[in-house]
Image: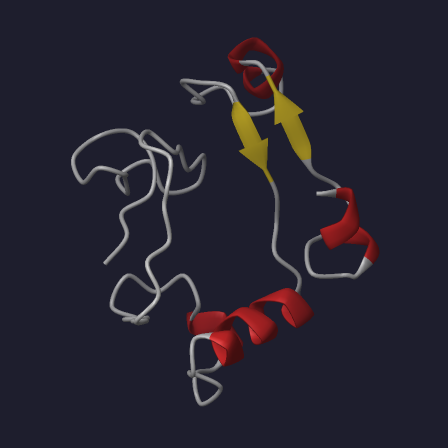
Length: 99
C-alpha cells in the first residue's frame, strides 16, 4: 500500500487492520481488511491495463462496466467494500462482486 501511495496510484490516506480498527472509521465493516481510495492516475492505469482506456475515469465503479481479461486473478473470498456492501466475492456474500 505504501508503494502504491508513493507512486500516486492510490490516495496517501489508507487504513488497514483488524475489524475493530477498521470499524473505528467505518462502522459497517464486518472483517479485517484494507480501505483505500484509488487516485485518478491509478484508475486510469487500471482501465488502460484492462484495455479500456476509452472509459471515462468516473465510470470505474459503475456496476455496468465490464472488464474482461484472459488472465485469471485469484481473489480472496469475503472481500468487503465499505462503500458498496451489496458487492461481494463470492456473489451474495460480504464484499465486492466481480463481473
